[in-house]
Structure formats: C-alpha cells, structure tokens
Image 1 (cartoon, helix red, strand yellow):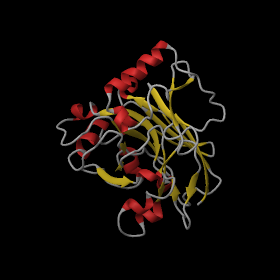
Image 2: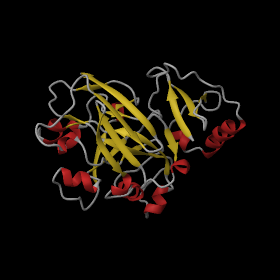
Image 3: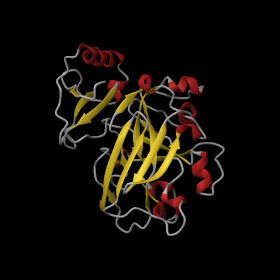
Length: 285
C-alpha cells in the first residue's frame, strides 16, 4: 500500500494512493497514519479491505498539498557514510561500524514544501536517501533478518545538510543537520510487502534539472536489515521512528571547487524507485 497524508500543514488527513493512481480518503477508516497505526495489524487489514472493496472516496489531488506521510514521528535516526561511492568521493575510509547521528523530528516537512537555506549558510548540500519506517518495537535485535521484520515500510527522505555548520564549526554533526525544514519526507509511505528487496532500489537527484546523484541501495555498506539491527543495540526503536539510511555519491561536498552548494531559488528534485518523487524550491531562511 501507498499511504500518505494530505492537506494544509498541521491539518493533514490520511489517504491512500490506489493501484490506478487515484487518491483515496482514509479518514473514515483510520484517524491518522502514525506509529500506533503501523503497529496495529487489524487497522492495516481494515485499510487493505476498504481499498480492495473499492468504496473509499476519491480526493481531487489538484492543488492539494502532500504532507509528510507519517504523523507524530518519535525520532529520526540517520546513518552517515553508508555508500561505498559516497565514501570514496569524500575521501573517507568506509566505516567499520555504522555512523549514527540524529535529526530532530521537527525538521520533517512535506515532500514539496519550501526548504529554507539557513542564515549565514555557505554550504547547504543535497542528499537523497532511502528512509526506513519502524512498525514494531525493536530492541537488541539479533539478526538482520529479524530486523527486517520490524520494518513497516519505506519512503523518500532528503537529508539536507549545511556542511560548514556540520564539519567546520566544532562539536558534532548535529548543528549542520537540524536546521529548519532540513528533512523533506514522502510523498508516500510504501509498505514493506510492496517494496520487496530494499537493496535493489535506484536513487536519483537533480538540481535545476541537472542530474547530480544516480545511485542504488545495492551500494550500501551496511544494508537496511543490518542498520536496523545495529541501531537497536544502542537505542530502542518504536513504531513511527524513522531511519535515514545514507546517500550515494554526487553531493556538492564531493564536487571539485567551486562546489555548487545550494542557494535560494534553486530547485531540487529527487526520487527513490517505487517510492515516489519530491520537488523543493529553496528559499532564504
């Protein structure tokens, strides 16, 4: 299933994109798309049954804002340097263990919302990523196979970063990762059964129409199952938590000088195979 939330910011309603591409209203079936819903097998069965019965009201998608496909996100866990080609372009050694950092849930915006370039920014960068959405509480998981059983679904994430804040201002990476609007998410949450193998998904990103990133999750150093297993050794993952699993090569930081960092007015488009497409116009913060 492709689950999403539509409407003005803060007043989104749950919806479903059916197999024919029609947007359907789910508000008569479930109150929200959030962690409790993803952990409730009976509620998910109700959605499937309603979709198969063909009685869900159609929504007019024209001009309708698409919000993040998940409400009340608990935490956004991010994995750094998780693609062999990205590590090579940045001159970094592939990490022996996953690099973990956190993004605040309030950085999450809709897939087509405006992204703000922070005041004083010189190095705002793009990163297309596969996002994993947790559906069952995960702690101290023993295997990657077990970990995949705790995944509710997948989505597109844009892990926007300010590299000067991240790398040159001291301390941790967090100050370059948590600026306002720095995690566009969606358009859909696609359930794991529909995605199949998460290690065979193409990822692409364009800036002002020019292809910058063209990768595949097969290049991940730590595959999705191992990432979820590993993270569960250090923190408990709850239904509705999100993991951004890293970006392939092609970011601005990896380019020759002068590096083409983002400025107000730039347009970024990105997609992950089967998970939909995002488009953001960047504006001054």
